[in-house]
Length: 169
Ligand SMILES: [Zn+2]
Image (cartoon, rainbow, N blue to C red):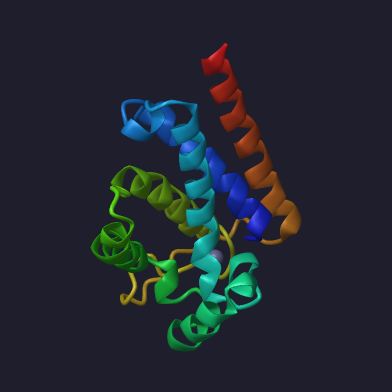
């Protein structure tokens, strides 16, 4: 799926998670935290393609995307649950002490965005290895081209925004 689709899916999943778990702190700390969480979810949804130097994020961070693509390949380890665990570990273990502030409330939106990306890529014919290093490819293959991808992410986003707006008024 392309970057636009991943941004829409991350936004949708962020709102759907709020509907399912409205008591999560990120959803109850005011509008600024809610919007920060949304931006982090979108970032989480885009960062998965850091294993591709021509992706939206990969093209901006070539010093990272080129070595990652060489080491892991596109849609390899970086497109798996193992990557989420590894990245969250690095964030908590190394970034949090550096910032000297708790980043844990923002890990949830990051994970939501990341998982939305894995889910969306599972809908494409190439699929992904959710359980890397197990070589079991998850592939539903209903999002075969840009049009069918659009027909998935656009109504999903419209429905999510409808839910959010309905909740506000
Ligand atoms: Zn991807």
